[in-house]
Length: 308
Image 1 (cartoon, rainbow, N blue to C red):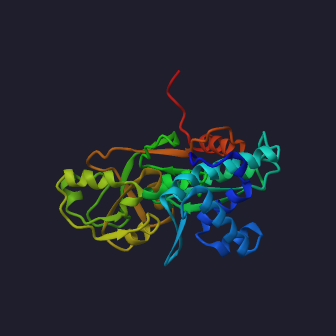
Image 2: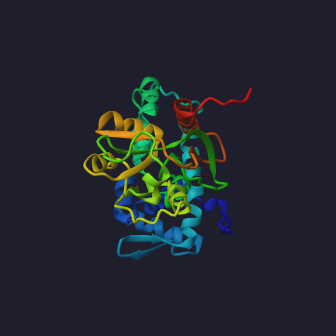
Image 3: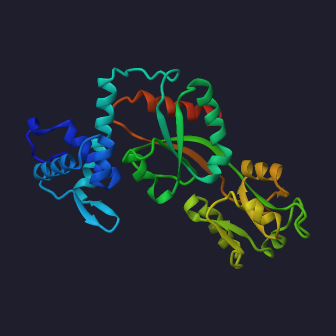
């Protein structure tokens, strides 16, 4: 943070106040979380503004909106405070057996259905008092949530290219077709022509499977989607009562077919597989708790490597 501020003027309490205001977009809410009075927070914000020679936050209809300067310094301050807290508490080694830490994971609904149970099984066995908060993953904001400390990890299919993030390849998923088990025209191996005559249920491209739509365009599939869904989880209910088709990752199709009147069928054309990866913030120093979480997720989901 190159502001020209003398080192003796840095105050950790001011930095904590800044972080809380940034995260809550509210002076009063920040005061509640810091257990101090609202005037104290307002005074600290005024001091920060003078120090950094910037307004930092401007009042808007939805609360306090950060300026460009505030947005630029927040990630460094957030992660610096995390490192200081761990150092002061003497947490050089994370002890999962006694920790009561809350981890925040970004997942789509498909991740909740197909991936989260394996991760929670590991956490339950190794860290009985740890809790997990699952936040909805939106591809466009995932990087921001990780770098700003709003989430500890993200698991998703679309690639997030950023030097600020560590990417761990977890698994490769193939895609299958699904439809009602009583569909009158679709069997176990439909032809391309048979598939293209049917209407489809699609999910939001924000979930990261837009390459499926691209493949359909390449096949000159010109029918408008019968239904657009924000999530995968409603798909078996829709397909079970209609003659529409869907395309889903294989493991999700298996879950839907086991729990609903749904059948899977082999797609009569190729679809590029989806590469599921784990993303975490590239921190400047070791963070034992988050390093442990990263290891747990990799152990639970990562496919064995073919390398010798």
